[in-house]
Length: 74
Image (cartoon, rainbow, N blue to C red; front, side, top):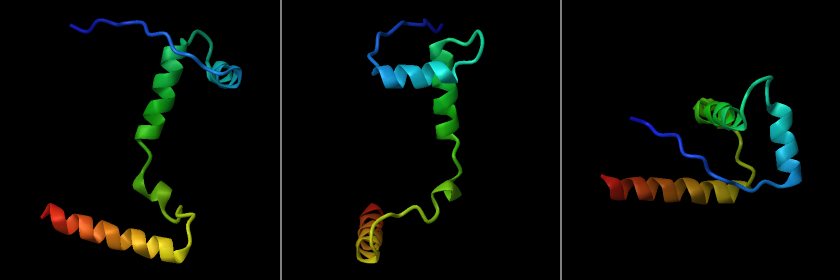
């Protein structure tokens, strides 16, 4: 059995306004948050392809650290 619990959160006026503008007729703020978060959860990995904003040296260092981390997992 699932019991819905109400939580109080604080939003800036700007965040509240944006959330309110996203609300569809008859939709609760909870539904808006769930709808938005579900979209974020389902982003395909390719969405992030080419998104690295650092320089090439930082990227190479990052790649090396990932490879080293993966070795410790095996």
